[in-house]
Length: 169
Length: 397
Image (cartoon, rainbow over all chains, first blue to last red; front, side, top):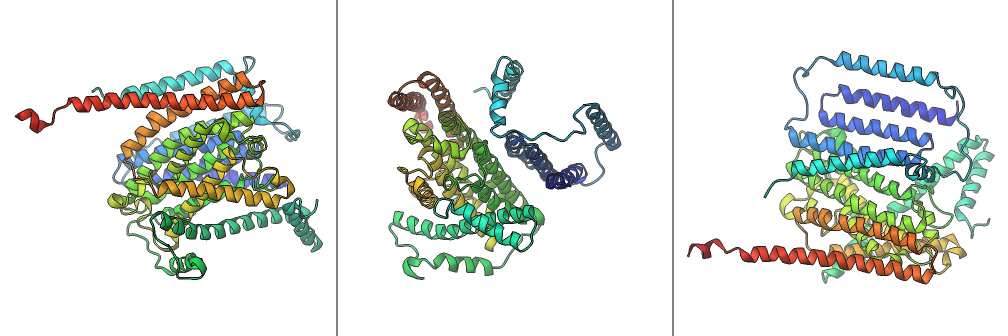
């Protein structure tokens, strides 16, 4: 086993365990903090894949914004962050089933891909992934249209949020 | 490669040689040497941190017309060590109903979010942890870990004051991240890279002269990110006792405090790296990396001094003023500046360097002037509205 594989196994296990803790812990703030740990694990996986830009964006967006927003929402809406009593619905087995089915579907799809069992080829020196990504997102031959459509969608959501929060004077 | 030209590599090779000579595996020896390097860097940073306490106290004393620590050792230099002994032997209290694990984790994360920044700080052309091509984004990502540590501290203390303080601090940090990230794009436009080393290498002329407004906005956003005065409303002593860290005692409080000082020093360093040429100073860094380290530490200290200067001469602002200032003034100006800079860069790229510099400088002056004029006219309108209202007592007569 190479060092990379050992790191991958450790990080994968930690990510999975924290993901499990997110859905089983009764204290909502603890669940949010476990979610942060899960997202961190995913960021490390991106780093192992040499996707440093995605790794950093994962931390900035998911931990710096979304997880913080979750914690804010929990702190502002509840006096007791620990759940006591029975859970609101008993559909946990349905959720577990969906998770297993999704995993099985993804595993099946990946297995039919030709590169599934191959070793990743080494990245040539001087290869700048961030430049490639920027070119792909902004060149007409690349993904400029989906990128712009997504931006407009986000802008529309932003305007909607401002409209909802705006009080008429 | 001798010691004078690349001390880090020479030291690492020497240590690896010894370890391999003892019969250690090559890869394992390399990993161990890297760990030793990280440990030494953190050790040096912590020693600097101790001295920063002394510097901070001396400087604030001068600003307030006092002398500062002067009893222990020459110029009171032993005072911070005595402070540390005091912090270490203090009783370690945990409030009733506190969430123990989160409560103890928060100070560590706070310190970690600062130390991790030094992974991308280039001390000299050949002395840096990693030359990430996403260096600037890494800084923002480390800041979000700091945000997390503060909200953890505030919530787990089981104290209303700390929760309110954490709310304020986090609201401020996630707000000022926006103009900071926008302004960081300006050195990126000039250098064509987000890597710290590339940004420094392309500063044949300091980026401060190309974009003084960006340097100013970065400094303001950095001060807000640090939660220092005038943005220290999260620890407003008159309302919140001490804010998010009110329940912490002994060395756990010390971690927050030392983390804040080192954070200020680090952001002084980033200010120097992004706008004042980092380790470059008239080619002196080419002579030896040792000069590079001295130059960048001096620049960081000057940046830190400016941050202290602002802290000890400005009053605290209210939370609504802080939010309005960020979202209605700083963020639009930062975005406008990025757009203007990108446009000017596209127009002037092929031009002479003096034309490029003059054009950039003038466009900054114009953006700053126009935005100040807009703010002035809005302020005038608001004042007229208030002057038009009659006081209630007068209206009754």
